[in-house]
Image (tube, rainbow, N blue to C red; front, side, top):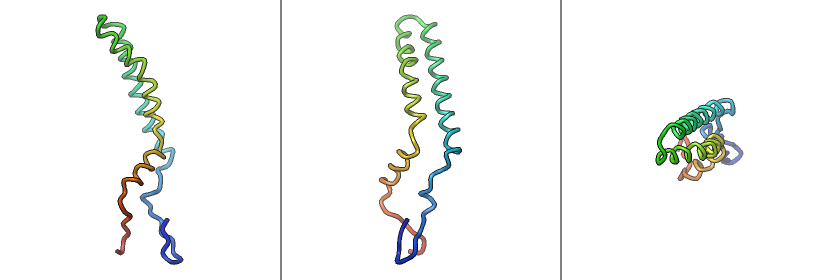
Length: 93
C-alpha cells in the first residue's frame, strides 16, 4: 500500500494467488518426485552392484527433497520477489 496525501493505492500484482490455486501445483511436483523415487528404487533392485548404490541413494534422499520442494512456501517466493524489485512504478508518472 502506498499513501499520497490521504489517498491509498493498492498494487494488484502484490496480491498472492489463492491457496486452492497453489495446492495442485505442489501436489504435481510431489507426485513426480515420488515417481522418480519409485523408479530409483526399482533400478536399485534390478541393476548390478556398482550402479545399484547410486539409485539407492536417490531412493533414500528423494523423499526428503520432495517434501522440501513441495512445501517451498508462497511466502518465500513473495519475499524474494520484493527484494529483487528495484523500485515501484506507478501509472501516471
